[in-house]
Length: 314
Image (cartoon, rainbow, N blue to C red; front, top):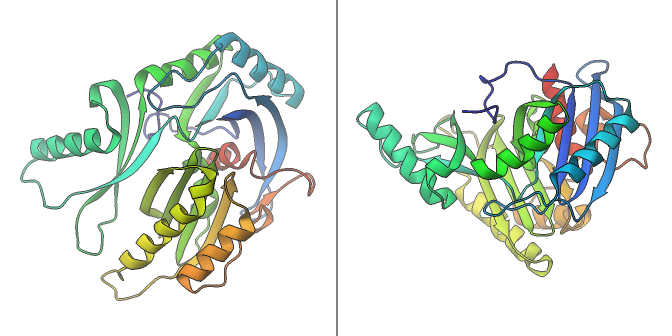
């Protein structure tokens, strides 16, 4: 296992992070503010439209030296050239995330590993030998079945990103897909009830429902912009229909939502959520999540993922 995903690989988390997505590269540095709030200390973004083509199966980086040059320029502009340790938010299409549920209890450790391997390959559509996979055990579901959060990226693809950082003398101690960086803003506070993250892109979206800071439902949908609303509606219906109370008998409603990225406006996403769940929610803004931005014109969406990873430094 390389320096990918796992909290046990490198116990330190820097307050600096890199965000890479189709079209945009961003560097951020956060500092802790009063209470549980964070303040954006330094940040820089740049257009990299033709340099990175996010994909799970295909090469991502068209020109490594050019990507490195962009990151170096961003670091210079943000006053972060001396920074060597980073967290890295990968493009959404580069990594895949799923929740693995075991229908029955394996009789031995070796049987458990065999089942997890089979479900991993089936879920990600690739042999485990070609992947870096991280699995974290989750709370059991309402039926008492064991569940695991699994994250995967192809070894060849991850090597492309690591090579760019190494060429700059940088090191990433934590690497996560974009939506899990963004999710830190929802799970870092102890609010009760379920929370929704909708992370959209030009290629579709990832929807995550959290319960007690743990992923309850994770679904990545590839779709066109014209199909976005219908697919999002189906995701919410799936959540509503399967929202079975836990053993305590409490039904935890959807109490928070965060909408990031392209594909749908925050207002329209809110309308669909409220129509489907019967709630009265609005998407959370940076200030609601405890992040102080330098001004109202600064785009939270452009730095939400790397900034979320940077909060893990405290």
